[in-house]
Image (tube, rainbow, N blue to C red):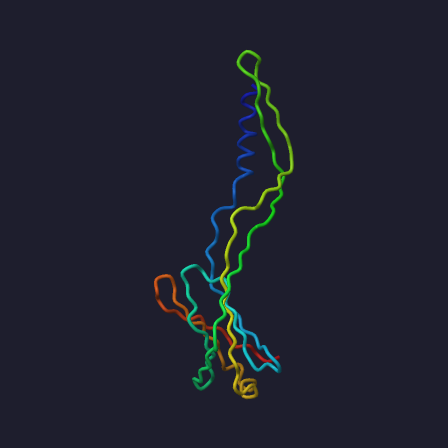
Length: 167
């Protein structure tokens, strides 16, 4: 009878040790903010760039079609990982043989492990100078930021977002 009681316990332990599933795909994100002394530039940061995606240029488009392009794109990669993971654990042992009988045992403990595989996150930062900050402030709601990029297939795409507002 004791032999069959251990089967549900082993199933429970194995289910508790299962991982949360595959890593979720990344989504390209961007944000823009006024920066510099007296808000004379717009700083654009693009994060969570998936593998195979290349940010080619960043523009600001004005109300009359005026185009301001970022001088240069600063690219960086940041590594992150789960770090140290600690969690409770259950150990199960069975000792003995055919002539001496079987002696099951259960132990409880606290496991500290190195969390697993890390993840690299690519980021692009650009600064777009505002040639006339006063004129920009007067019509800030009519401006937008465009991030031009190509995906893994080489297809060119544009991510548009509102330009930063004056508060």
